[in-house]
Amino acid sequence: MEETELQNELASIRSIMERSSKFISLSGLSGILAGVYALIGAGLGYELIHDANSKFEDLVSRIRMAEPVVTTTPSFNRYDLDYSSLIWKLFAIAAVVLLASVVTAILLSSRQAKRKNQPMWGAASKSLLFNMMVPLITGGCLIAVLVFFKLNDFFHPYYGLVAPASLIFYGLALVSASNFTFGEVKYLGICEIFLGLYAACLPGHGLLFWALGFGVLHIVYGARIYFKYDK
Amino acid sequence: MNISFDKLDKAFENRVRLQIMSVLAANERYDFNSLKDLLNITDGNLASHLKALEKEEYIIVHKSFLGRKPNTNYEATDKGKKAFKDHLDTLEQLIKQQKLA
Image (cartoon, rainbow over all chains, first blue to last red; front, side):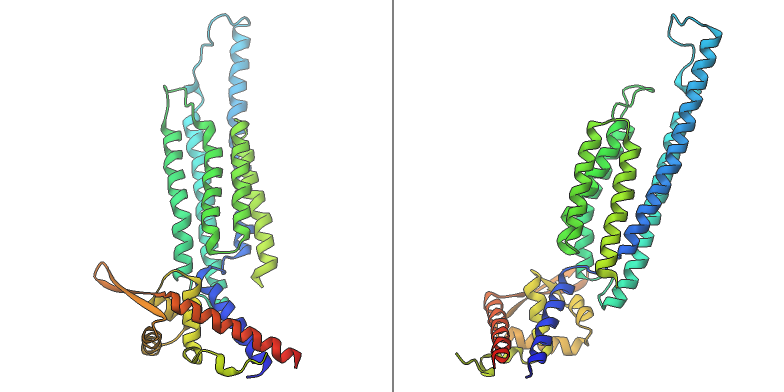
């Protein structure tokens, strides 16, 4: 055996150990695109919330004009403003963003898998998925509880926790999945967790944190993976 | 110190066997079909090499059923892991030696 042959042998062992245990076909480009979708979604969400708020202010000012001194509780209730439809619209945007991101990730990663000669649905991707799903499904169930829990028709005390909880559980999912793919995923996960905890300290800015966590962080991370591994 | 090629494990002379050991060194367990997809070889070919490694007691077989489908998993034994590590060390030393020469 020649020296280069020996080195090839070692290199091929290393490569097969990596390909067998880590899903190295995650596409960086799909990370960037997921970030872009999230920013577009956040932009649309902001518009919707802004609209609803200005309608609310409009209503308040009209009532004030009618009765300049407000002595009792205002003569309107929140049913005048359809907040529940706002919530559902925001939910629909989030669902579309999620779906688009997942579809993009699957399509681009299967292209990468073909190029890197790694099965798309093999032991590595199965472990990756399983380790991701445990925290993700837990978080999803908790968020469903947070959304549907209400003290009365007006007061949903846990709405403010939806954004932090989604970031935290997504971050946990990434950390737990990171053993089965690029090491960078772990750091992305830790950043998401920190962001989620910070969001919990600043209620009312959920959309901003979502845009940062699912938009900006994904773009930064996706770009790093793209330049380091995609080619 | 002179290391000769004789020190390389005969069981790993075959490329496929070495690849199988690499996979089982990096993973707790691996199932037959995933191995087949990863190494891109035929059922018969893979089975015969697995048999050979089993005979050396480098791997053990776990048979179970997933629903009705048989599911065969392989795991490296301590003996197998040690043999694999020794083989890698020898390869490394051979490279070093040839660089010096």
